Every structure is written in structure tokens, then in C-alpha cells.
Length: 133
Image (cartoon, rainbow, N blue to C red; front, side, top):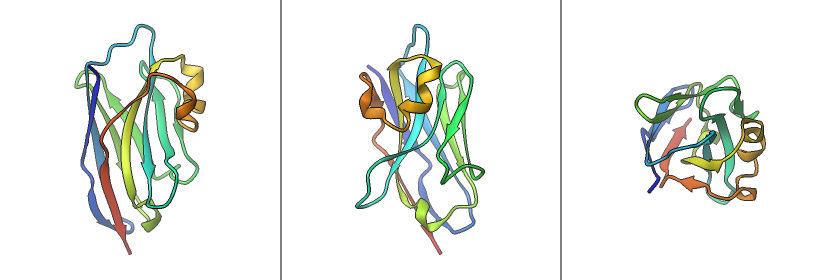
């Protein structure tokens, strides 16, 4: 059974930093898949924040976080991370990590924008990030 468990959320002042982690267990890809971070603010739709291919390659970022957020993975520890710097109040949201089913690298850029178009996604339970001015 695949499980994704986020941690590291909390409160920060605008301009500050937070680092989110996602512990991944039970996930085995044959050829690979996409892994990413998403967020959902109250009253808004869930949006993709960042994504990468499980065995390396391009990393994708939403325009709203480009240059401020960095996604990484540690395959030895089976974790994903999202380093969030220069936080803004509009970054306040519930943050989720997710993994796709088997998917080629070239689909990751589309997957994190339209995840519901793809079967086999697994989601974590989320961690709250609050940024105050």
C-alpha cells in the first residue's frame, strides 16, 4: 500500500522560509512516475506547485513560486522536500504531496497542472502552511 505523509508545515512571517517533507512508502515504479507538491487555499481550487520525475530529469514549477520554492527528492531516504523561501501571505494553503501511477517523464509537466486527468494518483493527507504579514 502506497502512503505519503507530509510534515513540516506551520506558520511563518512573510519573507521567511519553511521546509516541507513527504515520507513515501510502498511506492515502486517499473519505469517511473511523477511526484509533486500541490496546495489548496480556502475557497480556491487545488493547484500544482512543483513536480519532478521519479528517476530524475526536469523539475516543473508554477509561475507563482518559481525562484522561491525548490523541490527535491532523496531516493535513499524515500522522501520528497519542498523548500519554500521568500514566503508570501498568498502562499497560505494546505499543502499536499502526491505521486502518479506509471507515467513517462514527458507527462509530468501536464500531470501537475491537471492531475485528475491521470489514473493511479496517490495523495498525502496534507500539511497546513500559514504565512502572515
